[in-house]
Length: 297
Image (tube, rainbow, N blue to C red; front, top):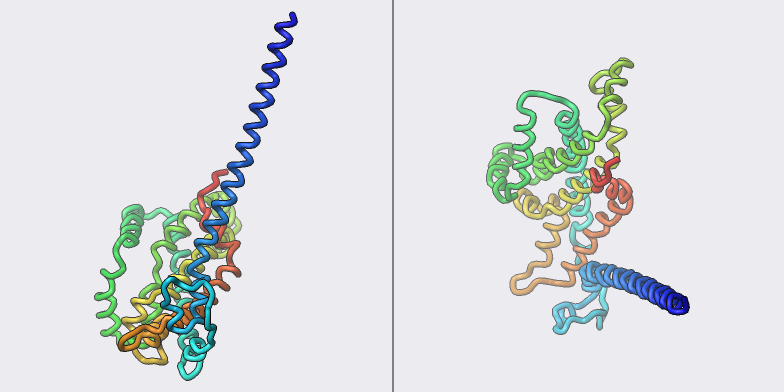
């Protein structure tokens, strides 16, 4: 009886010790995960920090090796060169108009096409949708020459049409909206039709309000695409007053022998601010939109 009591006490002691070590291991893993997130966040923010501090460095400090974390000789000359005597604000306005146009048209065409693919049935629907998806896999450079010829024939160089119209259809947006609309019950659409709603009324009053998260995410993606589309903007704009901010800054910083790193960093910082503002304004829609299909009810 005494041996049994001792064995039972030993087993309980071992079990308690095992629980303590398990709790310590769980706590250690939690802190390691927090540390990994912290280090990862610092590393991901490092380019932004480098860009902002670089805009206040002189050329010698900007290209110094080993790199300087803090500007040893801070200066505002880079910002002065960027903002004074150059149509930088006009470039910023051009970028905003181009990106907003791409986002607006992208949302309109994507929601209408997404509704057709997601809620309607017509011959060749699946084939047409897969062909649409295939266009997402083509390198962008393939379409440059045909689009260039079209812009030349239409005489659209140095116009907002050339910056916006070629991207009015956004295949990724159609795919995103279609996937979201497929989750809307057809019973809601049928009920609206029974109440007398037209086809457009069903789309406008029933489907579109329920698709707000996807539309918000799509607007951010399309705006970002239109804002950063450097190659196409470089091809179709030449007049100084029609340049976009990335193209204008790239032409401003490129010298005969060297590149003005500080001015380039100042331009990149200026171009970064509107994108950050757009993301902060619509971050709720962005998070909801990119989690489409992640949770099944």
